[in-house]
Length: 247
Length: 255
Image 1: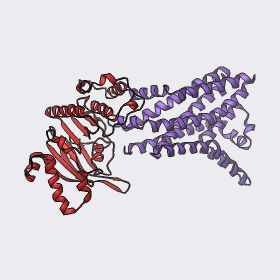
Image 2 (image 1 turned 180 degrees about the vertical axis):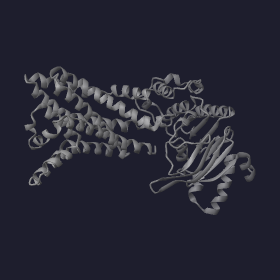
Image 3 (image 1 turned 135 degrees about the vertical axis):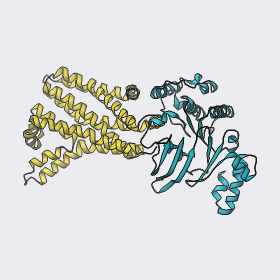
Image 4 (image 1 turned 45 degrees about the horizontal axis):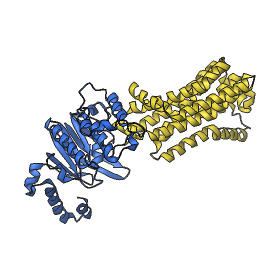
């Protein structure tokens, strides 16, 4: 469904993405992991067309997304740090996005109910806490029943109850056969959600494996342990102190 | 397109600065007509308002508004909306509200107190100047991510067109007064929208003597119908060129 082909991105001299090649298909739930600043968010934003790659192409349903916008109809995006106009209320933001999307499909308002957001519909965005802002972002991502969900650090900043609600929702959507892309640092949280894992480092894809494959090759039971054992192995090879502390 | 323009337009109308701007323009216009029996003097006062206040407010307000709506732009970009549409909607929304403020504040008293060629000309030129400086604001805000820098560029742009450019033209005129540069000066005015507007209105007012040396030269060219069309076309270019440069940059911007 999404094919990323030889993507390069440079911010000035800094090379953020370096020849990234990935393919994601429907029904999969993929975790993008890697140390801070390895290019996860840049990769996601390139798929969304918010960052324009220096070189390379991204295909969505076999069609290039460069200079296109219609395909975003089928994507729900939850940013790492949602930034919203300060003086709009929660209700106004949701209304506005509804108007802009102008979709005829049924709206998925499960999360509004689950997060009990009706109570704060008349609050201005600038008065909201970080976690509540994240809830608004999550609601907007799921609202239009998109085929693809891109979630950048979805549970960061959410309280345990809310992140549990969100996880359940993600699993429910995965079962409907949607493509879900998640970036996260909390490996333990990913265990029951994901089917594939992409590990990025310094703008390159280090590996892209299915979970059974990963567990088998490392001989571990849990994803977090499997990753840790790979990193340890790699660590002795590269002696990169950054890696030891980042995960 | 219309949905986004509507959202932006309503958002700007809620802004108290625009309301204050409209009120101040209205106050200035009505009092300058009220103080004198002679409407020509009132017109001259309003001319100064058009040439200094309107550009300043338009460019500053639009620049600050653009920086403040960076979150809004980011939000829209993750939705199925064309980049061009977002930028164009912002431009139309801002231009529309600046023109509306000018028209209500200064346009209506102008049309009531001087309902002739001059009055209509001033309204048109004032609207054009508003839009031109909104377009320049788009250019200055896309050049840098830093809000303080962007506003600095906007103020510099205004200072340049409102004051420095005239000084430079005068300097050139005196320095090169031995040479026949009159015709070249006509071309030089095209480089400043404020000068174009000033000449256009002063020629209508028939007080070109007040413009001094420059005025006499331009009467020949801008006084004709052809000159009128050319100068309006130039004013339109001052809208189109800065905006399309900013649009090109916005299309390739990383957010």
